[in-house]
Image 1 (cartoon, rainbow, N blue to C red):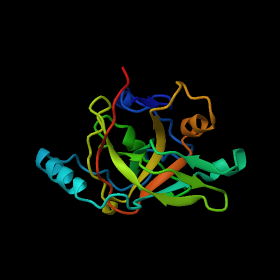
Image 2: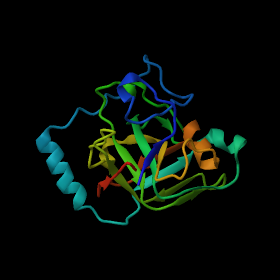
Image 3: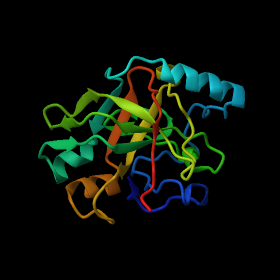
Length: 201
């Protein structure tokens, strides 16, 4: 299994972790955004892992929205398969189809949450948002180590990668959507059941 990271690498702190290109709505440094969550202690991380494993399985917990910019450039229905990866961009801020992404999420010491779709979801211009099932993603290589995303954290996520894709770089429609970063996600319940992401040798 391999994880293919599709966007251009952002800042030095994310190099080698996940590539992503901030959307046009990325908030400027002067924007008023709630502070990012503090890094958990090892004890908290262990407790979160235990809690993550005890959550209900196969229950919708992640609301996915196609960005409003996608309607004009590619109005056809968009199906995201299982294995699409979303990376956290701070706390929810603005319209869910055109959020203001927190530029502080690019800092090397930022706490990053990563989730992967466990079930496919289809988004249309008539129904631009829909719920599906997601799991937290774990990878030592990419330093994805947060086992639990709590709904109460009110985080927002941006599409950033695809697991186990057949080609690199992707040249199909899904690859173009990922590179543009114009699909967003929001937890509707706690997300856990960490899924180990592996690189293909």
